[in-house]
Length: 494
Image (cartoon, rainbow, N blue to C red; front, side, top):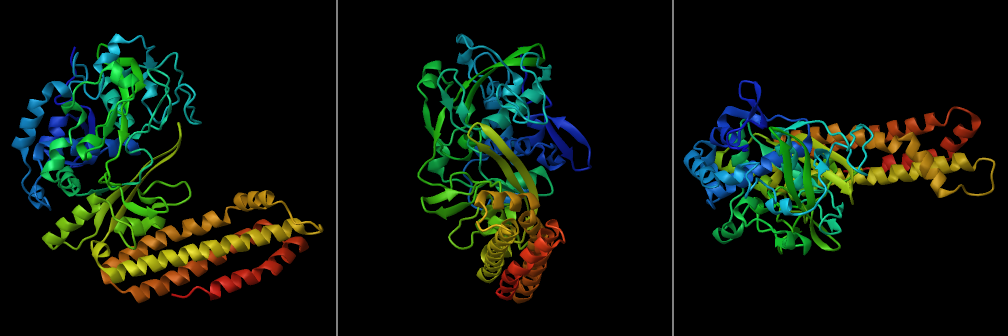
């Protein structure tokens, strides 16, 4: 039995004429100018499929000089075709000795088969229950091998860490899990791959081997928790963070063997993931992570590398290509990822944004966005203090004791005035970024931003006071605490 990912359709793509279809790896990589984008509603699937295509392109193209501008016009089809042909057997999902991104040695274990939902990050499986899904492990539906391949690629990259209890006790999270990933995108798949194919030194290229170029893992290595240093994007984008072996029935599947994979260790550079920005923390430089409480725009300093942050290598590379071409148009970005809490999945996210190359290399414009974010954080902190005072005053009416802080914060959270404040600022901030990239007028942009902040503060305060009603108790609490809002508004200066 065979299922070659080089010839079988399994990658969902949108063609340049808008048609939607599934394509093989060969279709996607040998004729990327035909395709506009990967077509999926699942963020981790979009990001992981791009990472797989980039891993193959890294190995096939080689360590070319920076920037790889020629790839935009002349795609190295012969190199890629030769590479795919060389490793053809390793791209067979069902090969008996070298199954794609799997561990053949699991066939010799006594592991109990798991349902395919074990791979699906949006499905219930075992104790990992999701409110919107009612999958039953005892009777998984049949899944096509193309769908399984997509699940496998995404799972290995984004799996949360936690207990597995197969060959060892637990497994570490996938190499992309938790990171805020940034992928520059072009008008075609060829442009996207060219913009994100960050060059490597020859010495690093020689050790940066993807999973299919490495020896098959043994059960003994898995039991011992074999460690692998992440050597570069090809290795990182294909890491076997879990050991999997599919158990198909014909061209469909319900179950698979599942166990802990290798234990990844980063090299000395925290910027090892080309798609992640690096920030300075108390513990030293760290990759930028997704946050439950912060949207992408609030980490804009890390995205463009202002202050002590370093932008993602993919974004730097795309900017260098645009500069060499003299193309000042904004760079389109996909930004997102998956945020776990140990073995649980908290959220996944994918945003489409645009950043002018000028914002990556002009200190004056970076200062303006830094100041805008600084003012927003100051306003948000001041608003939270005023809201706490308002609800504390309202709860304390008629009592000689101060209310329990937990009760105050619970009431404050239920009203959602602070959340409304931040959500109102997001579209305004991206408009500021657009205007700065187009006109470069920092002074006007910041003055407009200050007015936007004031309006958002007033609206949030109105929402909070209105939520308490219009009786004497509510009016007294608002009257006592309103001066804090006046002081906050007066202190917002650019």
